[in-house]
Length: 202
Image (cartoon, rainbow, N blue to C red; front, side, top):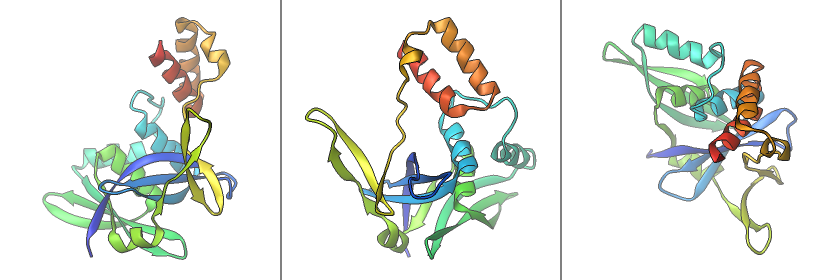
């Protein structure tokens, strides 16, 4: 079976499962997307790994795993989403230590959170993508603007956009930096990302 490489396209809030998120993986050499339902903690961990400028004050579980692996010279070489049963994706971490390769079973959300921290590629098999992959459906928002949306469980889960609230636009840079520090300390990383984006715009 041939492997297909995937990239992370984004994270959406799942409107069908309370407190769950949909991780959207994108086929590198194609147009199909692979939506995977994950929990809030894993979504937060993946979002933090994607946002390079946001550092939690204490290591999260996946950061701890990375630090542990670094200390003992364990490398995660790649992640393979190898099975799909009743809507549940199964993944493996391909690890290496002292030139010996080991395969470790993992939840897909954990595997991807670790792949980001190790900068390891993510793969799935072509038959899984054929079975569960979907195409983006373009919905016109208005005459000038279009927004991608993904049909998930018969409802559209919109991709997360870093839309800045009006009250951030009225803040000074000094106030924004102070708010950013507070958001990181309180581990409200979604708000921190929005404030960081507003600072970047300035």
